[in-house]
Length: 76
Image (cartoon, rainbow, N blue to C red; front, top):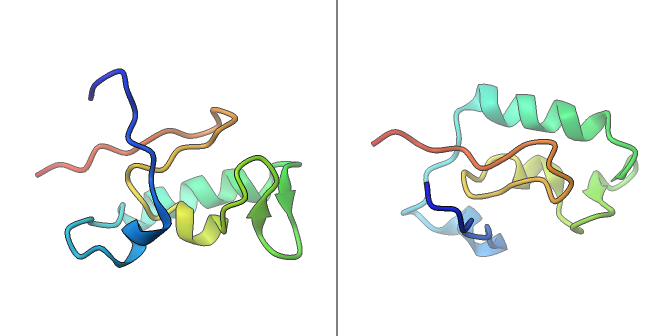
């Protein structure tokens, strides 16, 4: 991985070229979010980035702006 991160975009969710992270990684990321004080508990959105975290945690290029979890390198 290069030092510059590719910012995940909302349309990555519907891009057939972008593979989702394994379910175990998505669950791990989301559990971190659920315990974070920056998560809006009603809407499940992040106050730091504004994203819907249940969806964001499935994207390999997504990362937490507060450095609680990072991008996931998919193996080819």
